Length: 117
Image (cartoon, rainbow, N blue to C red):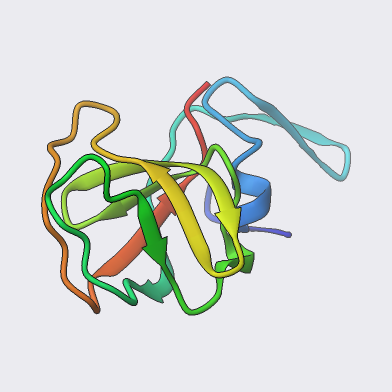
């Protein structure tokens, strides 16, 4: 699903994982080039604490249906790559895109964006 407003196109989580900078999108008869990406609020929060250990790779959320494999999530200042999804648990690679491994507490907000390809 996609919506547009004043030069901004917003796509849902599952679609956003397939769209990156440089992608060409077609809406009706118009073609648009993706020139930038931003993190979007998911409305989800962390359902369990995450430690500051690289091996702590399960991110539990209330509803994982809005997330997709290869999507990047942001919790506090740490970016994580979703490598698999099992039920409402995101299996992630921690501290990607130059971010720093950190501990996170239950209730921290999750932001998401698809990969920059």
